[in-house]
Amino acid sequence: MNTHLKHFQVLLLIFLVACHTKTEATSTPTPEESVNTDRKTSYLNAPKPFQVWVDARAGSGWGNQ
Amino acid sequence: MLMYSSCKQAEPHQDTVDIKTDTNKTTLVEPDGTYKKVQLEKDTIVLKVMQTRVKSLSSFPSIEEGLEENLSYMEHMASQAQNEGHKPDIILFHEFPLTGYSSGTRQEKLPFTIEVPGPETIRIGKIAQACDCYVIFGSYVRDQNWPDHILSINTVMGRDGKIAKTFWKSRNIKRIYKDREITTTTIEAVRDAYRAKYGIEEEFPVLRTEFGNIAVSTVQFDPFIYAAFAMRGTEIMLRTATLFAEEDVVFTAWSNDFYSAMANFTLPVSTGYNAGESVIVGPNGDILAKHPSKEDDGIVEAKIPIAAFRKDRTIPNYALEITKPVFEQYKQEIPINHLDMDKTSLPKTGVEMKSLMDSISRYNPPKTAN
Image (cartoon, rainbow over all chains, first blue to last red; front, top):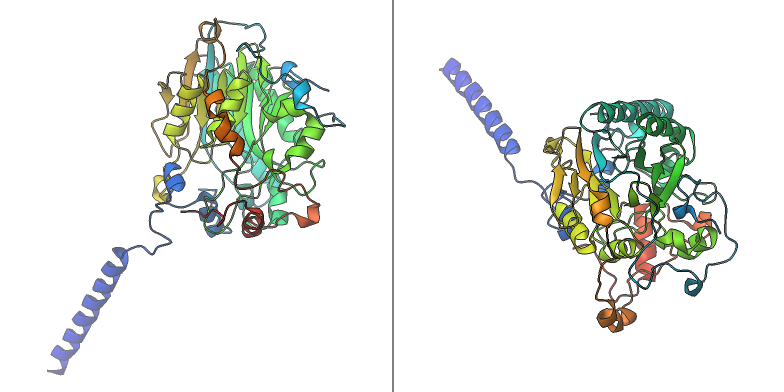
């Protein structure tokens, strides 16, 4: 009985981890990540003003992709 | 006063004008609709736009290594432009092929600039000599005449390898960021000092070449700026960008009756940005050439029948007289000369720049990004 319980607990854990991962992958973007609806920014084909994006990646090695 | 725009290979801004040029004594626009030009060398010219990636100097182990790699890449692309398709007469790179973009304060950004003239212009001049064409590129620039200012300048290298002209950015787009404003120094930001140093003709300069009258700008969504360039006799309006809207380029060319091109940089689509897709457009709004990719580097080219275009051409027919009463009462939100100050007072960051603009705004309330 104990063995069955342990198997059940392991399966439940795997199920919960899988659900959590899926939730993260499909979660709604935060306002900062979402498409910027600002008129001029949109005209510039940009999800957000470019320098904001550059600043967010400062020190990350961006620019050498 | 130096007449740089009429001197094909003059070093720009190498001398200064001690007194302001009086607008009334300088002919900026001919009253009969004609404009100054020099004899064309050929009837049709070839314009090539270089769509290339950005590698920011700040991401290299050293600035020297970054400049070397970026210069080598420009040479590589220019060589490709020479050896594929038609022989180019004008090669147009994008806004920052040498320096890329940087972050931080004014002092942190200043090292990631070049000097014009400098070692880089000598090297790019050799590209121009090798291909016997004009080579145009944008860059962040530092200048000892403008201490601690970060300038955004498009430089034109002539066929002899020397600087044919430099084009300061006329003005920056404003109120596009919620939390900051662009800190680079433009003509508008120091207009009176700029005029005193270089002359009023240099506020909307035109380089009269044997391939047509050209001007270069990084300004976007700004119809008055481009109307002024057109009034001054621009036939080919070359534009460099950090992202752009095709509609802006098409309509600006169409409404101002000039050929135009936009050189954009590339970014992986995975970044979320729709970069690339550089274009060359005609004066009737037709897209003559367009790079198909947002993320792949490459070259687009188009032939411009400059002799036929120029024949009997006058400057555009704008509705100035009827709109003048409105324009005379209009006040732009941010006064010109807003960065004409001691270097220690210059805004150090975009946030400080926004504070400055909010403090001098003529609008109530000050404008904000949407």
